[in-house]
Image (tube, rainbow, N blue to C red; front, side):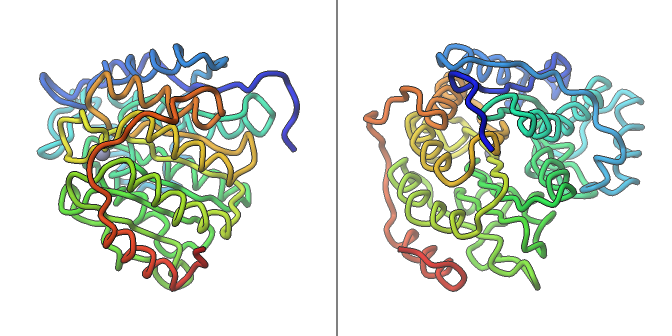
Length: 343
Ligand SMILES: [Zn+2]
């Protein structure tokens, strides 16, 4: 039960090890991203409680990741690291950063269970939603949100994951593709990295209908996202009735982002957050920083996310730009309506 402990509060997980993860000169996934997100949250006007996560144990990591992959990544970092693929790099200090980023979500959930705050926010790096069980990719080493969902599943909880990063969270999708107790919904730009996330990828076996992708074309604006969340995501999550809601909150669908082609503004994240807050109990939601590479957009959108979620003065009236491709909305609705009732 939610406890009445005065003003709404945010539990913010950060650690200095996030600043030591060195991806190389000029890489967009850089330490200043964390500084920007934390600045936005600290200036949001919301009371913040801090949490400093311990490193993940191997036992926690192997709820999602292959033991041989975990051991190989540790050896790779200990030997000084380097490039893992064309996008992804790790250095000596990346091991500790990755361990603490992976353990942050479970630690935040445990603290929320004892009433520490109304909402959790994990502002750590490396991000996680592209990491596969046996492979780093797309700037991600361990799948932080998936590790958290696995931790919650271990406590018997049903978990919904909403992923509004502009890229499809292929690693998260893979982790729970057959699991009917983890609902994964992603809105993302079609035709860009990592190439997965079509409407047809809806889960398998028992998990069929519990993996929902809403791809959108370049130039899509916040109006589409607001409608997709209101008309598709909220009804589905309400019917699923999760014990916990986790958000893979990349901010790279923002109009200012250099890596993608969508047109969201900070207020759109506030609006989506406000709507999602209505479908889960207080103290049962955690927001995870994923992508987002424009520092000002990160600062503003992170602030809007926590303000929208905690209903604390975000700018609902800010204008949105870009297109609202009705055909994409209709097609996604038709697909989702095979499994879930939409109004
Ligand atoms: Zn992304």
